[in-house]
Amino acid sequence: MPPRILVKQGDITSYKGDAIVNAANNRLKLGAGVAGAIRKAGGPSIQEECDRHGPIKVGEAAITGAGRLPVKFVIHAAAMGDEPVSERSIREATLASLRLAAKHGVKRIAFPILGSGVAGFDFKRAAEIMLDAVRSSPEAQQLEEIVFYGFLPRDAEILKELVDSAK
Figure 1 (cartoon, rainbow, N blue to C red):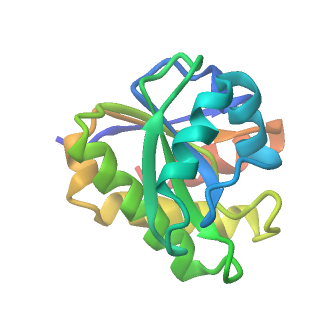
Figure 2: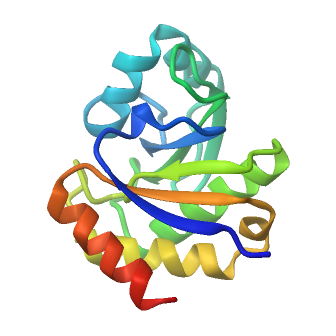
């Protein structure tokens, strides 16, 4: 059975599921944007684990514990870093995240829109790429719930339109 695909507006660090995805750079340094929010809310243990995993290649993902966050895991999806964000890197990082989620028994996961913050990739196009990746991923079929977060109300509206139009 395919997962429920939902949209929420607000801070992804408040998600109460099994895992959240970090819009990461391939060095796994928790700087600004989503990564900074995760560092601040989750505490230093997440960066310490990232330091043991990184660097990884752009398009790959790594998994760590979640520190003080209300989830078990943070999956760090590297859509940028040593190379600029691209359609390919967004798709590959999304698929890599789904593979890690399935491998670790995650049933409920939340994603930000990769590459659309600090990296400046078009929000709507990045969301379209990610939704297509989710729909084509066999690992996504093992999940119960996939939530896409839009930090701003307008971003959540765009996401809702995209999710609703695909039903």
